[in-house]
Image 1 (cartoon, one colour):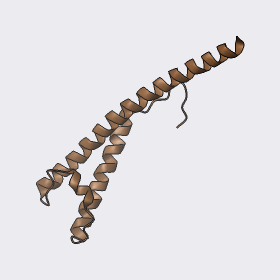
Image 2 (cartoon, helix red, strand yellow):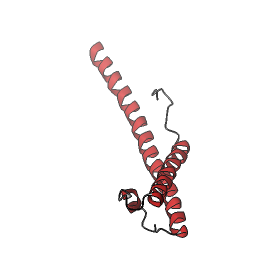
Image 3 (cartoon, one colour):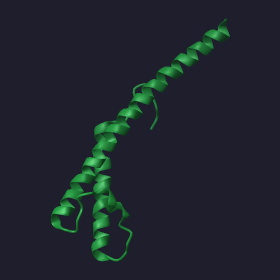
Image 4 (cartoon, one colour):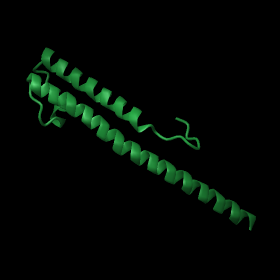
Amino acid sequence: MIFGSSSQIPITALAFSLSAFLAVSFLLCIGTGAIVPDFGAHVFLQFFPRFSWTETGIHHGLIESLAYGFYSAIVFGALFNFFLRRGRLGGANARSRGEAMSNA
């Protein structure tokens, strides 16, 4: 991503992409657990408090993964855009101060 004058992270696109990533990861973990139940590497499932190996539990886990993706995108995207604007303003002020000091 090139940081131009108007570049911000699109929060909606980030929310959908993170949600899709987490949902696919969740489903891969469920699939691995169904194929190899004694594998023991299902650490990802600890982040889903309502998860159980039932149809309802899997649906709850899938909905929670979508919610985690949206939450992460909203928080990260808002903070990223805030600090991007703040840094851009601070950088412009520092450059103008440096130019003013060099001209004096």
